[in-house]
Length: 348
Image 1 (cartoon, helix red, strand yellow):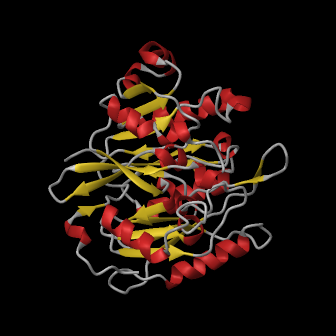
Image 2 (cartoon, rainbow, N blue to C red):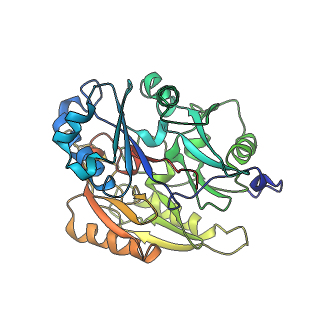
Protein backbone atom coordinates (compact mmCIF):
# COMPACT_ATOMS: atom_id res chain seq x y z
CA UNK A 1 0.00 0.00 0.00
CA UNK A 2 1.20 3.51 -0.82
CA UNK A 3 0.23 6.20 1.68
CA UNK A 4 -0.40 9.64 0.23
CA UNK A 5 0.23 11.88 3.25
CA UNK A 6 3.66 13.50 3.44
CA UNK A 7 5.05 11.40 6.28
CA UNK A 8 8.57 11.67 4.86
CA UNK A 9 8.65 15.30 5.98
CA UNK A 10 8.13 14.17 9.59
CA UNK A 11 10.71 11.43 10.02
CA UNK A 12 12.70 8.80 8.11
CA UNK A 13 13.53 5.17 8.86
CA UNK A 14 17.18 4.73 7.76
CA UNK A 15 18.31 1.67 5.87
CA UNK A 16 20.59 -0.73 7.75
CA UNK A 17 23.51 -0.16 5.38
CA UNK A 18 23.58 3.57 6.15
CA UNK A 19 25.82 5.14 8.75
CA UNK A 20 25.85 3.38 12.11
CA UNK A 21 28.73 3.22 14.56
CA UNK A 22 27.32 1.02 17.32
CA UNK A 23 25.69 -2.41 17.38
CA UNK A 24 23.71 -3.60 20.40
CA UNK A 25 23.85 -7.22 21.56
CA UNK A 26 22.81 -9.20 24.66
CA UNK A 27 25.26 -11.62 26.27
CA UNK A 28 24.06 -15.26 26.73
CA UNK A 29 24.01 -16.31 30.38
CA UNK A 30 23.01 -19.25 32.57
CA UNK A 31 19.44 -18.02 33.11
CA UNK A 32 18.65 -18.09 29.40
CA UNK A 33 17.65 -21.00 27.20
CA UNK A 34 21.33 -21.17 26.24
CA UNK A 35 22.20 -22.77 29.58
CA UNK A 36 22.45 -26.32 28.22
CA UNK A 37 24.99 -25.21 25.58
CA UNK A 38 26.33 -22.04 27.17
CA UNK A 39 29.98 -22.48 26.15
CA UNK A 40 29.05 -22.93 22.49
CA UNK A 41 26.69 -19.96 22.59
CA UNK A 42 29.18 -17.65 24.27
CA UNK A 43 31.87 -18.70 21.83
CA UNK A 44 29.61 -17.80 18.90
CA UNK A 45 28.74 -14.43 20.44
CA UNK A 46 32.42 -13.85 21.14
CA UNK A 47 33.21 -14.41 17.44
CA UNK A 48 30.45 -12.06 16.29
CA UNK A 49 31.41 -9.33 18.76
CA UNK A 50 35.10 -9.64 17.90
CA UNK A 51 34.44 -9.12 14.20
CA UNK A 52 32.04 -6.21 14.60
CA UNK A 53 34.29 -4.51 17.19
CA UNK A 54 37.05 -4.27 14.59
CA UNK A 55 34.94 -1.67 12.79
CA UNK A 56 32.46 -0.12 15.24
CA UNK A 57 31.39 -0.12 18.86
CA UNK A 58 29.43 -2.98 20.41
CA UNK A 59 27.06 -2.25 23.29
CA UNK A 60 26.54 -5.47 25.26
CA UNK A 61 23.76 -5.87 27.82
CA UNK A 62 23.39 -8.68 30.33
CA UNK A 63 22.82 -9.37 34.03
CA UNK A 64 26.30 -10.59 34.84
CA UNK A 65 28.89 -7.96 35.88
CA UNK A 66 31.35 -8.80 33.12
CA UNK A 67 33.23 -5.52 33.41
CA UNK A 68 36.40 -4.39 31.66
CA UNK A 69 38.67 -7.04 33.18
CA UNK A 70 36.50 -9.88 31.90
CA UNK A 71 36.30 -8.29 28.49
CA UNK A 72 40.07 -7.89 28.34
CA UNK A 73 40.40 -11.62 28.96
CA UNK A 74 37.99 -12.37 26.11
CA UNK A 75 38.95 -9.81 23.50
CA UNK A 76 42.19 -8.36 22.27
CA UNK A 77 43.02 -4.80 23.34
CA UNK A 78 41.96 -3.18 20.06
CA UNK A 79 38.52 -4.80 20.11
CA UNK A 80 38.04 -4.16 23.83
CA UNK A 81 38.27 -0.42 23.25
CA UNK A 82 35.15 -0.68 21.11
CA UNK A 83 33.10 -2.67 23.66
CA UNK A 84 30.69 -1.13 26.16
CA UNK A 85 29.02 -3.36 28.75
CA UNK A 86 25.80 -2.48 30.58
CA UNK A 87 24.70 -4.61 33.51
CA UNK A 88 20.97 -5.04 32.84
CA UNK A 89 18.69 -8.07 33.48
CA UNK A 90 17.66 -9.98 30.35
CA UNK A 91 15.49 -12.97 29.53
CA UNK A 92 17.35 -13.85 26.35
CA UNK A 93 19.67 -12.58 23.65
CA UNK A 94 17.57 -11.54 20.63
CA UNK A 95 18.45 -7.84 20.58
CA UNK A 96 17.01 -7.38 17.09
CA UNK A 97 13.54 -7.84 18.48
CA UNK A 98 13.67 -5.90 21.75
CA UNK A 99 16.32 -3.32 20.86
CA UNK A 100 15.32 0.22 19.82
CA UNK A 101 14.35 1.06 16.27
CA UNK A 102 16.04 4.31 15.27
CA UNK A 103 14.35 6.95 13.12
CA UNK A 104 15.64 10.29 11.86
CA UNK A 105 13.47 13.32 12.58
CA UNK A 106 12.92 16.25 10.22
CA UNK A 107 15.41 18.39 12.18
CA UNK A 108 18.14 15.73 11.84
CA UNK A 109 17.83 14.46 15.41
CA UNK A 110 17.35 10.75 16.12
CA UNK A 111 14.61 9.05 18.11
CA UNK A 112 14.91 5.53 19.55
CA UNK A 113 11.52 3.89 19.31
CA UNK A 114 10.98 1.43 22.16
CA UNK A 115 8.19 -0.78 20.88
CA UNK A 116 6.57 -3.33 23.18
CA UNK A 117 8.14 -6.79 23.04
CA UNK A 118 5.96 -9.72 24.17
CA UNK A 119 8.18 -12.68 23.36
CA UNK A 120 6.94 -13.22 19.79
CA UNK A 121 3.30 -13.36 20.69
CA UNK A 122 3.62 -14.51 24.32
CA UNK A 123 5.54 -17.64 23.35
CA UNK A 124 8.32 -16.86 25.85
CA UNK A 125 8.84 -14.74 28.97
CA UNK A 126 9.98 -11.29 27.90
CA UNK A 127 9.37 -8.75 30.70
CA UNK A 128 13.08 -8.17 31.35
CA UNK A 129 13.90 -7.84 27.64
CA UNK A 130 11.02 -5.40 27.21
CA UNK A 131 12.60 -3.17 29.88
CA UNK A 132 16.14 -3.11 28.42
CA UNK A 133 15.80 0.09 26.38
CA UNK A 134 14.42 2.06 29.32
CA UNK A 135 17.28 0.75 31.47
CA UNK A 136 19.84 1.83 28.87
CA UNK A 137 18.26 5.28 28.79
CA UNK A 138 18.46 5.40 32.59
CA UNK A 139 22.18 4.69 32.40
CA UNK A 140 22.70 7.43 29.83
CA UNK A 141 23.60 4.91 27.11
CA UNK A 142 20.54 5.52 24.94
CA UNK A 143 19.08 8.95 24.22
CA UNK A 144 15.71 10.21 22.97
CA UNK A 145 13.85 7.00 23.79
CA UNK A 146 10.14 7.01 22.92
CA UNK A 147 8.04 4.25 24.50
CA UNK A 148 5.49 2.96 21.97
CA UNK A 149 2.40 1.03 23.05
CA UNK A 150 2.48 -1.25 20.01
CA UNK A 151 3.97 -4.73 19.72
CA UNK A 152 6.67 -4.83 17.06
CA UNK A 153 9.95 -6.72 16.64
CA UNK A 154 12.85 -5.29 14.67
CA UNK A 155 13.26 -8.52 12.72
CA UNK A 156 9.77 -8.17 11.31
CA UNK A 157 10.42 -5.06 9.19
CA UNK A 158 12.84 -4.04 6.43
CA UNK A 159 13.36 -0.59 4.88
CA UNK A 160 15.32 0.89 2.00
CA UNK A 161 15.67 4.26 3.76
CA UNK A 162 13.47 5.93 1.16
CA UNK A 163 10.02 5.23 2.57
CA UNK A 164 9.54 1.61 1.52
CA UNK A 165 8.79 -0.98 4.21
CA UNK A 166 8.75 -4.76 3.61
CA UNK A 167 7.06 -7.07 6.10
CA UNK A 168 4.96 -10.24 6.45
CA UNK A 169 1.28 -10.59 7.23
CA UNK A 170 1.88 -13.73 9.32
CA UNK A 171 3.82 -11.71 11.86
CA UNK A 172 2.35 -8.22 11.92
CA UNK A 173 -1.24 -9.46 11.60
CA UNK A 174 -0.82 -12.32 14.08
CA UNK A 175 -3.62 -12.32 16.69
CA UNK A 176 -0.98 -12.55 19.44
CA UNK A 177 0.58 -9.18 18.51
CA UNK A 178 -1.95 -6.36 18.11
CA UNK A 179 -5.30 -8.15 17.80
CA UNK A 180 -7.49 -5.04 18.09
CA UNK A 181 -5.93 -3.35 15.07
CA UNK A 182 -6.78 -3.86 11.41
CA UNK A 183 -4.19 -4.06 8.65
CA UNK A 184 -5.08 -0.51 7.61
CA UNK A 185 -4.68 0.77 11.16
CA UNK A 186 -1.28 -0.92 11.48
CA UNK A 187 -0.16 0.61 8.19
CA UNK A 188 -1.24 4.06 9.33
CA UNK A 189 0.61 3.68 12.63
CA UNK A 190 3.82 2.48 10.98
CA UNK A 191 3.56 5.31 8.49
CA UNK A 192 3.30 7.87 11.26
CA UNK A 193 5.98 6.42 13.53
CA UNK A 194 8.55 5.36 10.93
CA UNK A 195 7.92 7.85 8.12
CA UNK A 196 7.25 5.11 5.57
CA UNK A 197 4.73 5.56 2.76
CA UNK A 198 5.13 2.45 0.60
CA UNK A 199 4.32 -0.69 2.61
CA UNK A 200 4.76 -4.10 1.00
CA UNK A 201 3.34 -7.30 2.51
CA UNK A 202 4.34 -10.90 1.92
CA UNK A 203 1.70 -13.53 2.68
CA UNK A 204 3.95 -16.53 2.06
CA UNK A 205 7.37 -17.62 3.27
CA UNK A 206 8.21 -19.69 6.34
CA UNK A 207 11.16 -21.65 7.66
CA UNK A 208 10.85 -24.83 9.67
CA UNK A 209 11.59 -24.24 13.35
CA UNK A 210 10.90 -20.50 13.17
CA UNK A 211 9.37 -19.09 16.40
CA UNK A 212 8.78 -15.59 15.02
CA UNK A 213 5.79 -16.14 12.71
CA UNK A 214 7.85 -15.47 9.58
CA UNK A 215 10.12 -12.54 10.40
CA UNK A 216 11.11 -10.83 7.19
CA UNK A 217 14.82 -10.86 8.13
CA UNK A 218 14.88 -14.65 7.71
CA UNK A 219 13.28 -14.47 4.28
CA UNK A 220 13.87 -11.30 2.23
CA UNK A 221 16.04 -8.20 2.69
CA UNK A 222 15.92 -4.85 0.96
CA UNK A 223 19.15 -3.63 -0.62
CA UNK A 224 20.22 -0.50 -2.53
CA UNK A 225 18.87 0.36 -5.98
CA UNK A 226 15.42 -1.23 -5.62
CA UNK A 227 16.88 -4.66 -4.89
CA UNK A 228 15.49 -7.49 -2.77
CA UNK A 229 17.75 -10.33 -1.66
CA UNK A 230 15.71 -13.37 -0.72
CA UNK A 231 15.93 -16.97 0.43
CA UNK A 232 15.42 -19.26 -2.55
CA UNK A 233 13.11 -22.29 -2.43
CA UNK A 234 15.94 -24.80 -2.75
CA UNK A 235 15.37 -28.38 -3.77
CA UNK A 236 11.83 -29.68 -4.28
CA UNK A 237 12.44 -32.23 -1.54
CA UNK A 238 13.06 -29.55 1.08
CA UNK A 239 10.35 -29.13 3.70
CA UNK A 240 10.08 -25.38 3.06
CA UNK A 241 10.25 -25.52 -0.74
CA UNK A 242 6.61 -24.80 -1.54
CA UNK A 243 6.24 -21.86 0.87
CA UNK A 244 9.46 -20.26 -0.35
CA UNK A 245 8.43 -20.82 -3.97
CA UNK A 246 5.14 -19.01 -3.32
CA UNK A 247 7.11 -16.22 -1.64
CA UNK A 248 9.32 -15.89 -4.71
CA UNK A 249 6.22 -15.53 -6.87
CA UNK A 250 4.98 -12.76 -4.56
CA UNK A 251 8.33 -10.96 -4.73
CA UNK A 252 8.19 -11.04 -8.52
CA UNK A 253 4.80 -9.29 -8.37
CA UNK A 254 5.90 -6.50 -6.00
CA UNK A 255 6.51 -3.04 -7.42
CA UNK A 256 8.62 -0.09 -6.36
CA UNK A 257 7.03 3.26 -5.57
CA UNK A 258 7.64 4.17 -9.24
CA UNK A 259 5.73 1.06 -10.35
CA UNK A 260 8.74 -0.97 -11.52
CA UNK A 261 9.66 -4.55 -10.60
CA UNK A 262 12.34 -5.00 -7.98
CA UNK A 263 15.75 -6.39 -8.86
CA UNK A 264 15.64 -9.83 -7.25
CA UNK A 265 18.73 -11.72 -6.06
CA UNK A 266 18.27 -15.27 -4.82
CA UNK A 267 20.30 -16.64 -1.92
CA UNK A 268 20.79 -20.38 -1.61
CA UNK A 269 18.73 -22.26 0.93
CA UNK A 270 21.09 -24.01 3.37
CA UNK A 271 20.91 -27.78 3.61
CA UNK A 272 18.62 -28.75 6.49
CA UNK A 273 20.12 -28.29 9.96
CA UNK A 274 18.62 -30.35 12.80
CA UNK A 275 18.79 -30.24 16.58
CA UNK A 276 19.60 -33.26 18.73
CA UNK A 277 15.92 -34.25 18.76
CA UNK A 278 15.74 -34.29 14.98
CA UNK A 279 13.80 -31.00 14.66
CA UNK A 280 14.67 -28.91 11.62
CA UNK A 281 16.11 -25.51 12.51
CA UNK A 282 15.59 -22.20 10.63
CA UNK A 283 19.02 -21.82 9.04
CA UNK A 284 19.08 -18.95 6.52
CA UNK A 285 21.68 -16.79 4.84
CA UNK A 286 19.23 -13.86 4.71
CA UNK A 287 19.85 -13.24 8.42
CA UNK A 288 22.99 -11.15 7.87
CA UNK A 289 23.91 -7.78 9.41
CA UNK A 290 24.98 -5.09 6.95
CA UNK A 291 26.97 -1.99 7.90
CA UNK A 292 28.24 0.81 5.63
CA UNK A 293 31.34 -1.25 4.82
CA UNK A 294 30.85 -4.85 5.97
CA UNK A 295 28.34 -7.69 5.86
CA UNK A 296 28.46 -10.15 8.75
CA UNK A 297 27.09 -13.34 7.24
CA UNK A 298 25.92 -16.43 9.15
CA UNK A 299 27.32 -19.64 7.70
CA UNK A 300 26.62 -23.26 8.59
CA UNK A 301 29.69 -25.41 7.76
CA UNK A 302 28.33 -26.05 4.27
CA UNK A 303 31.35 -24.96 2.20
CA UNK A 304 29.75 -24.77 -1.26
CA UNK A 305 26.58 -22.99 -0.16
CA UNK A 306 28.40 -20.80 2.36
CA UNK A 307 30.67 -19.58 -0.46
CA UNK A 308 27.77 -19.14 -2.87
CA UNK A 309 25.96 -16.96 -0.30
CA UNK A 310 29.05 -14.76 0.03
CA UNK A 311 29.38 -14.39 -3.73
CA UNK A 312 25.66 -13.66 -4.09
CA UNK A 313 25.72 -10.82 -1.57
CA UNK A 314 28.59 -9.19 -3.47
CA UNK A 315 26.19 -8.65 -6.38
CA UNK A 316 24.13 -6.22 -4.32
CA UNK A 317 26.99 -4.89 -2.18
CA UNK A 318 30.07 -4.97 -4.46
CA UNK A 319 32.10 -2.63 -2.26
CA UNK A 320 31.42 -4.43 1.02
CA UNK A 321 33.70 -6.86 2.82
CA UNK A 322 31.86 -10.11 3.55
CA UNK A 323 32.68 -11.59 6.96
CA UNK A 324 31.41 -15.19 7.30
CA UNK A 325 30.77 -16.34 10.89
CA UNK A 326 29.79 -19.87 11.89
CA UNK A 327 26.31 -19.57 13.43
CA UNK A 328 25.36 -23.21 13.88
CA UNK A 329 25.12 -22.57 17.62
CA UNK A 330 22.63 -19.72 17.13
CA UNK A 331 20.17 -21.75 15.07
CA UNK A 332 19.94 -24.25 17.94
CA UNK A 333 17.74 -21.60 19.59
CA UNK A 334 15.96 -20.85 16.30
CA UNK A 335 17.70 -17.61 15.33
CA UNK A 336 20.84 -16.40 13.61
CA UNK A 337 23.23 -13.46 13.33
CA UNK A 338 20.86 -10.62 12.43
CA UNK A 339 18.53 -11.72 15.23
CA UNK A 340 21.16 -11.09 17.93
CA UNK A 341 22.22 -7.65 16.69
CA UNK A 342 20.59 -4.20 16.48
CA UNK A 343 22.34 -1.28 14.83
CA UNK A 344 22.23 2.09 16.59
CA UNK A 345 22.72 4.90 14.08
CA UNK A 346 24.33 8.07 15.41
CA UNK A 347 23.50 11.69 14.65
CA UNK A 348 25.48 12.87 11.62
